[in-house]
Length: 145
Image 1 (cartoon, rainbow, N blue to C red):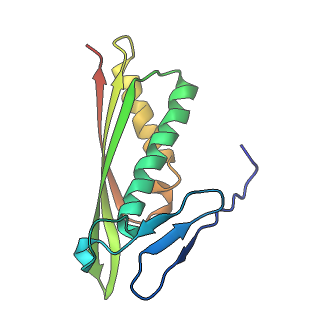
Image 2: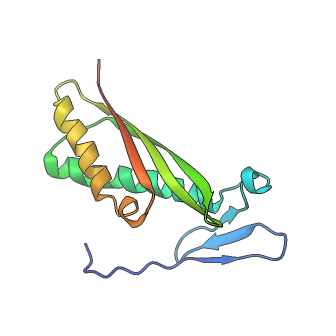
């Protein structure tokens, strides 16, 4: 790992009614629009969906590191994030994230240890730790048949 601090760059550009083109050095651009809840088309990534996806992505990658260090093998991990956006005090902000994680492990893996690794990963996820909203992790560890 590179020494801290790490710096990340991204940019956004658009005309008055175009898709917002999100870009970052070395990455393919993606299109963004307001979600349906903000009268957008609902068929593009939005800042709200990107935030939820970032939380899911970070948790998955953090779990990989925790599992590797703990010598816990898995066959798959699926993470779904639902973010609750509310308006309080004249400002909109996320107040809660419900994170559902389903981890499939080989039959010989200690289910309790795998569950602890999932919770440790959630506690160590840098995106989670950068958010002020509450988080709820619903973790399921499923041993292979």
